[in-house]
Amino acid sequence: MSISKYFSFFRVLTFEAGALLCTGFCVFALYALVLSEPTSANIKFERFTIKSIGQNVKEPTDYLKKVFDRIGYKLDAVRSHRQVPRVFLANVPKDLANLREPAERKNVFIMMTLPLVLNVNEIIQQDRAHLKRISVKKFAGKPLTVIDKNFLENLSKTYELKRPNIRELLKRVDIIPPSLALAQSAEESGWGTSRFASEGNALFGQRTWRTADGLVPKQREEGKNFRVRAFSHLLDGVKAYALNLNTSPFYNTFREMRSAMRKSNKGKIDGMRLAETLFRYSERGLDYIVTIKKIIRVNNFTNFDEAQLSNKIKNQPISVRNVDARPDA
Image: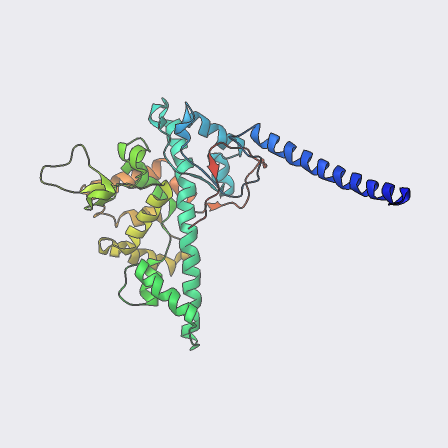
C-alpha cells in the first residue's frame, strides 16, 4: 500500500471512529439523564393517569393537590371556562379522610371524580354519534355496511338488548349528567372516604351477588348475601355505574325522561330532575332522592353539566411521578 493510500485510509478510519465515539457519548449522556431522575419523565402528556400514589408518597392527598396546582386545575376555572384537564386517578388517595377541612376534602373529591365522569360520557357520546349516523342512513333507505351491522350487534350486547333496536339504543346510549354522577358518588362513598372507595375504588355503592367481585359490608343485615362491587381502577367503577343506569329495568323511567329531554329544551339533560327517577337506586327511596337533590343544589353541581375534557394541560411540559398514559377505553 502506498503512503498516500495509507493516509487516505487512516483519515476515513479516524472519521468513522470519531462518529462512533460521538454517538456513544450521546447515548451515554441520554441514559445518564434518564437515570438521574428515575421517578419522573419530562414528557408532554395530553392524557395521563396518576396511579397508586399512596404506595410511594407519604402524604398522597397533599401530593395530589400539588399536581393539580402544577397543571392549573382549579374548580373556579372549571366553573368559568368549562374545561377540565385529562387527569385520571387510578385509586382514591388513602389519606383523603385525614383532611381536616370538609370543604378541602370535597374539592379534592370533585376534582378527582369529575374527569372520570366526563371521560366515560365522552366514550358514550362517540358511540351515540355513530349510532345516530346509522339511524340517519337507515331512515334514508340506504343499506347498512357490515361494519354498521357489527357495531349494532356489539352495542346491543353491551346495552343488554336481545336484538338491535336503534330507537331503544338511543334511549340507552346516552350520558349521565355530571351533576347527578357527582352527587351520587359523594353520597355513596362519603365523599371518597368510605372503605369501599379506599379498598375497592367503588364510588357508587353498586351491589353484586357474585362473591368474588365485591367487599362485604360490615353492617350487612343477617341473611343477606350481597357485596359492594370492587374495581381495579376508579374509571372502571364509573363505567359500571353508567352502564347500570343505562341498562337496568329499575331505571326505565330515568331513560324515558332523559330521552324526552333530548327532544326538548335544546337537548339539555337536567340532572336535578333525573334524580327524581332514582327511587330504586337505594333502599331509602324518596329520602335518598331528597338527599341527592340537596347535594346537587348545595354544591352547585349543575355548573359542571356543561364541562368538557380539554385537549391540553396547562403549564406543559409536566413531570409527574407514578404516571402512565391510559387509553379512553
